[in-house]
Image (tube, rainbow, N blue to C red):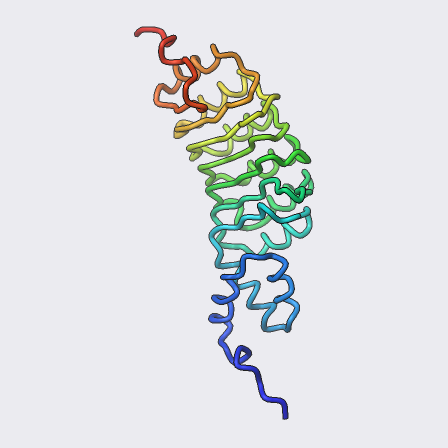
Length: 223
């Protein structure tokens, strides 16, 4: 009779704890296919994770959404563009928005994902009501997304709009006016005139506008 392997004797809780240490999603997928117990262990490992980063991995809509469906405790999600080419689209953001963890996310990074538009971003953001930090730099979002962020993310503290060339002064004013906890905004590479940033500081004087070094303070009106 074949003797049971030592690792197969591990309780499912301990197996899940070990599998949590695996950072490669390819390895997790392979581990999930070992046996039924390991598949359950991978699910429980994902359910315990507080952070997930797909940066550096070639992810698509279905594989990303499939993993997130089990990540019930997730707080921070990073699906930034990788050197291998991220294939996330609006459909992927919609699928992600249906995951149970989305309403508890405090940080989301969609940096550099050029395959998404306002449609997908709005679908995701309207369900991410606990969001504090958002990176949508390098995407093609417009004021439509900024409006959704302003209406859905009252806890927002920082946002990166690096090279978001389709956002306008109108969208930024709505965002800063409604997100009363906003502390920092990165507007490098946008096409918004300097006068707009002075207006933002008039609305929220303590706001940090990045990149640092913009000649704003000297132009503020004297009270």
